Amino acid sequence: MSEQGTVHAAEYLQRADALRPAARTAVPANVLEALRSAKRLWIVPHERPDADALGAALGLKAILGQFGAEVAVVSSDAPPAVYDVIPTIAEVALEAPTWQPDAIVLVDCADPKRAGRIGELIIALPASTPRILIDHHVSNQTTWPLAWVDARAAATCEMVSLIALALGADLSVDEGRLATTLAAGVIMDTATFQHGNTTPRTLEVGGLLLAAGAPISEISRKIYRSKPLAQVQLHARVLASLNTTDDGRTVFATMMLADLTESGATPEMSEGIVDSLAHVSEADVAIFFKEDGPATARISVRTKGEGPDATAIAGAFGGGGHARAAGATIERPVSEAVTLVLARVTELRAHNVAG
Image 1 (cartoon, rainbow, N blue to C red):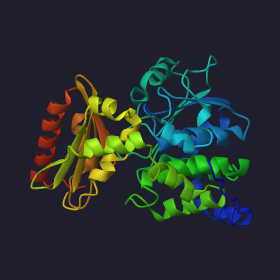
Image 2: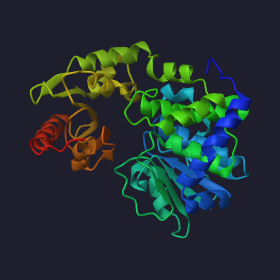
Image 3: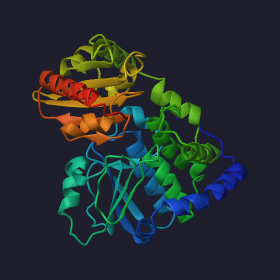
């Protein structure tokens, strides 16, 4: 990062003391004890990790490291360059360690199957290996006994910040690098505290991380207001395909692999396009379709106002997420996926399945 935040030690301690009782109440005791007792852990984010998944994994690694644990963050996919705002991003490994873990922690993810090839390694581990899940997606229906799923949390990084307080870890260490790591996920998933998922607790955690040294403004700028030319050109191409249905209430656009080639962009540079679609004031559903292969499409869904529940849209195709933001992978060509998904939205409107 080009700028570092300032640690406000006295204010940090005051805020940490004020929030700690709520943290100890929020985090399930069995999850806390499992994290406290494990000495060698793998922490795994979902495939194609975003800032919240990466921040939660790397933040938890640093937190548990304060208590002497050996921790590896292992991802099936390399972190996109846009998330270099996370100061510890280089600690993400793309291959599992040779050592066997005492416990596995899955973050920002409902199931090992959504963690790609590393998820397959988790499934193959001995059944006796404790598996811990930490996630904030309302669609997460896990039956794991060691799970903390809090759909009220704006980000998994918000939850990991509370875990730090409950364990007695110091979020202000390393000149604010840990706080910055966690703040990146909170900022990403709330659009810098603009989304409706922002709660008073989210703002308390944000204030805590700011006091602990996270440069909130700089993180927000790097994630949301700083893009290379190729990314801007990609967004322009895709937004030129914008179309509407349902009398203008549904807005959608498609990105083909050729769009990446023509603009010189990489797949992760499509981040933010669905949010641009959601800016259309007349629409309450925004859908971004991405070609992911000859017969595979990925969708990102945003809804607002009286629009349908986003999980009811994505869930029909095996996806999930939140009431206002969800996604799915559909094993169909993009053209077919567009037809199927738009029909689903129209069906939900007819049955008034609001978010």
